[in-house]
Length: 136
Image (cartoon, rainbow, N blue to C red; front, side, top):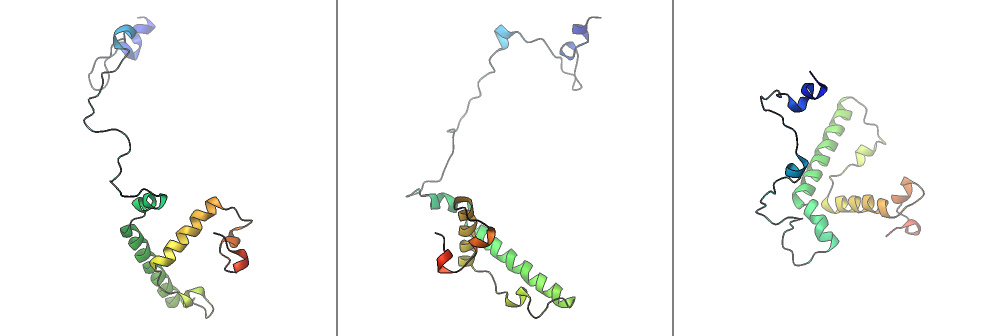
């Protein structure tokens, strides 16, 4: 038996289908697929298409509401756990916790996105509140 006869090309595979040699002249092009829909990115019709409009396609109100709800739920559970374990000290930042709002979340997202555009010397610089250190 030659190496060609032992090769998987002339063997039957596990599904019981026969393999065959490819004829480059006859089998070089796959059969075209009949696409019935337009190809490319399909976006909803919008009156304006600003970068913010596209951002809002991903960060929907539902997503923001879920992030806010889960953040607040996590904080409350964490505070309760620390209280139960007697580990909530008088100067803990959790004592100052107040529920996250949508405007605070937008501000946080803006800072995170700006961190990718505006490079500052260290992470703390992005969170400074002094007017001298403000970034756009």
